[in-house]
Figure 1 (tube, rainbow, N blue to C red):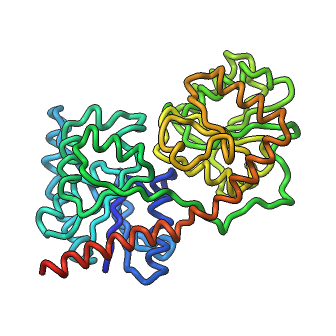
Figure 2 (cartoon, rainbow, N blue to C red):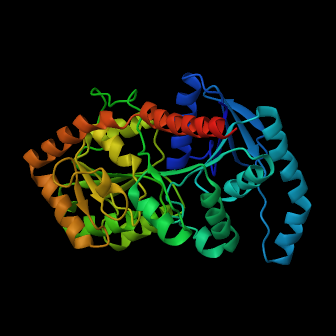
Length: 382
């Protein structure tokens, strides 16, 4: 068994997909399954690297476009891209092509599936639902490619039923399996660490993009009245940073909102351990690894109900679910958690008791079992 994990994005970029693929690659390799990560070359020409003991290939993935200039560039670049993908295939000889987050990477993997007959697996990370750039709304090629890939896939997974339901409704998926995300339990809060500010605070963590809903969080914080006693900290970076700074200023709470920038995994664990609560206000969230990170740090969790969270968060027990578009309701829960010590402590303890269910070892084991079932089926029909 030799697995090519074909990711839409990878190091040096950060996000849920990148973390998922990095952790799965490491776990599979440590368990004795040869793995490579193939990802999209965004123009940096990074070539090949070994990261965390896993070979990573950055491959060109040009796609045709309607604009004359873009079409001309595709015609020039396409032969080189096809050769690069074919060379990667011939050098590694994978027995499974496993696409994570379908995009141009998926189009090229589908071509390899057609030309080599190698089984194709698809793991959707909610890219059809939560893409700030609206790639699937704009690209007929991606929509047709995903539909074709799902019909040809040996298996399809997603981190939540929410994502699978969308694939069934809009992309003709017939069968899929939920494989929830994981969290790195080797990282934990340093109880000797100092809080980042000298006042109680609520914490948001994630990429600063529209779908993550940090504008909703700032609006709810302004409505809550907690600004007199608390601060709102947001860790992460992204295209909405300046807009969020401007929103806090327009709400008159610029001094109470602090954008921390990108933090390390350890810094996030420490910041969560001191927070009154961690708030995930996404407009759409396929799963939400941040929820698991909050549980790991025994932090109280307020979680968006718009997405996959209702499939694993027990409302009122290990987290509080809310539609973040209702900023009044979100503000009410923020007040409730910040002012109720018993509730806050109970949510944190219940979440921490459950986080052990969500390890990357389990995720890798689930994938390995699916790979094995495909190999066994092929052996029977050979």
